Image 1 (cartoon, rainbow, N blue to C red):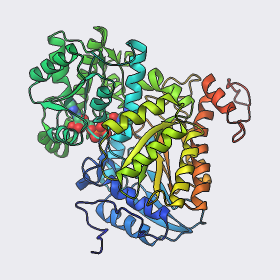
Image 2 (image 1 turned 180 degrees about the vertical axis):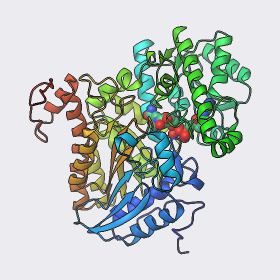
Image 3 (image 1 turned 90 degrees about the horizontal axis):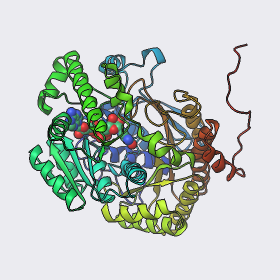
Image 4 (image 1 turned 180 degrees about the horizontal axis):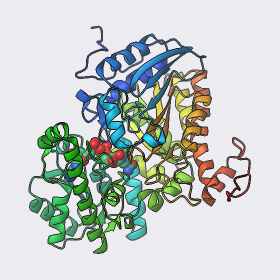
Length: 565
Ligand code: NAD
């Protein structure tokens, strides 16, 4: 039967070696767009919401249809332009240029507020693309799980004996990204107890193997968690309640978690955070009927939430902000000590960025899970001496269920990403794999983001808010020939707080792909290493020096105060 590419319910990407577009660049973009809107993958495909509050893949259904139509007819020397989820132009460029260029949610500095964004979104002029939603490289909760795992592993090394065995991790939010928390804690042998206000989200995590059990009663959930901790059993528990209700219960009963965080979508208090007094359907009604009242309630609850986190932190819980800007929202409500909670990037992740390591990922367009396992084996063969990767692949195979197109994430570093992708391209050419493989990454990476409350928090040279780097990253990846390149505003920490870029290349076995893969996946982490070396990180300078045959950093000298004239 002929496939209907324009249906809006039950979207699933085509799989296998037969192309519907005129080239694999276009075909990969089409399949990954559809994969983002697959109900097994995205959080709320009916509204084109993929994850992260209101992170969307397309602005409207007519815009989606036109993107699909454009990709199906796009020539191999043309480039499609997407402006905040809507296709706006097709230009003759050249065969090695990107097939798609995407800009989402960008606003001029003075106008970069959530209120102004909401106003423009209501007029149909813009769309929030989060990081991988509007750039069509979301792969379900798996996309963040290694980051969560590495964060908790670094924390466990710093504060415990390297594992979470016999430790209790408490947090909230079981959405697209937050849903990775319980499984990551379990992979480190710990007990996870996560509050989630939406029963449907709890069910999705149970269905996809990210959660073991769930309770409606806080008392029952806490008692099960404490029993598991006592028995050093690894277990993930969801509890159907507001974050503040769980935290209040813990405080009242003097139960201090070993590790504490939060992953509600507090970066977007209007859509991503449900105020204490409201259930999910009441929240939906009030959000539409009186957004000003809603925002006041949400911000009050967020302030209370951070006060609760601070109270438990003072009582001994190792507490960290997990990239949802909850500290800043609370600070703006008068919680002046909100930043006593450390951010996870400076605390646990920056050394990975110094080595060009970040959430690299791939999806097999064959749709065959066994081809992911073949690629796992290849990665283990190529990087058997890298303990971070060997441990990760073993755990990923044991615990991770695929959602939509089978995919894998791996924190590969400079020199590893391009080597691996190039080898996979050879495998596609030789027929070892039955269809092409898409390679991309989160915007949450070493050289692709400026976000002062997350990826670039507390940079050594104070360059947290310098946003030239992600712009250079997008330009470099365009010059290097990524199949699609994106530049977004507001992902992770919200409107006004982040600018970031993405790049994707498909390995179709051709010489053309080989060139793109080796350029993009060396240069892309390369600029991240240079960004960190420029900021004064010795580990980044060492990484850069080890790759001087492929990139050079003209050294001007340390960044010092330059006179105005
Ligand atoms: P999401 O919108 O898919 O999920 C948020 C979840 O929080 C929802 O399930 C919602 O019901 C729940 N929630 C809202 N208010 C609540 C409350 N008061 N109590 C309990 N649960 C509540 O968002 P997501 O994709 O899971 O992302 C979560 C946050 O993490 C976002 O702010 C996002 O920007 C950030 N993020 C962090 C990383 C990272 O690597 N650290 C990566 C991506 C996103």
